[in-house]
Amino acid sequence: MSFIVSVGVEIIVPLLYCLIAAGGYGILFKKRFSVSLSQAFLWQIIILTFTSIVFSSFTAGIAAGIAVALLVLTVSVVREKTLRPIVDFYKPSLGNLEVVFFLLLYFAISICNAGNFFHHSDEYAHWGIFVKEILRLDRLFYVSNANMAHKDYLPALSLFEALWCKLCFGFSEAGTYRGIQIFEASLVMPLLSLGLDRKSGLREVIKTMVP
Image (tube, rainbow, N blue to C red; front, side):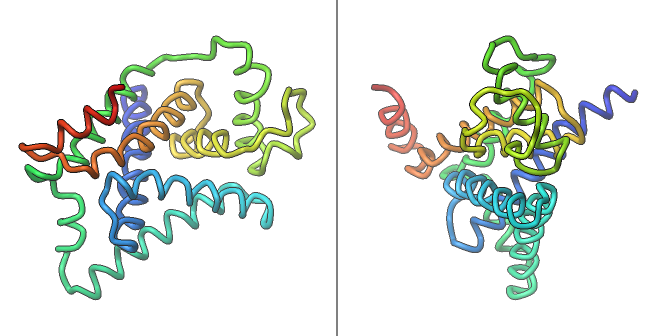
């Protein structure tokens, strides 16, 4: 039972974060889900970098990002006096299957990485250690005394992987893979802004993705 609960938390909590972050950014800047997801992730990385440097707190950056997104969603509901803005943003339709497509990607990535583990030298030499040290210190890995290669790497992807593990309430090698792959998937999602409609949207997406 505890294993099932643990797996459920590792899947549901990060998913809720993705939906909240994309919703807050999308409603604030009037962007579609497919575009807002990656941009929300990029802003989250900037916030994490800022709080880790200025306030020496990685966790504060996560809290700030979630708080801002929730504030935007709350203000939109209060201002419109209806849940319509949020419902319209997430509601799938024949011409807007972006959320459905993301959910399919999300669960496919979650399932495929179940039980995954590090198996490349660079995962043990640097970026795997980067993530562990960020979580251990609650700061950027630069201040760590741990033995690691390429300590001068930019921390962006490691920060997002650490964020993912934090949302899962603990480090796991599978969690780091899920984090980076979800981030990569979000960068592909804007292709769907071309429009997944019955006439030409899907064809345009395929033409863009296939050389």
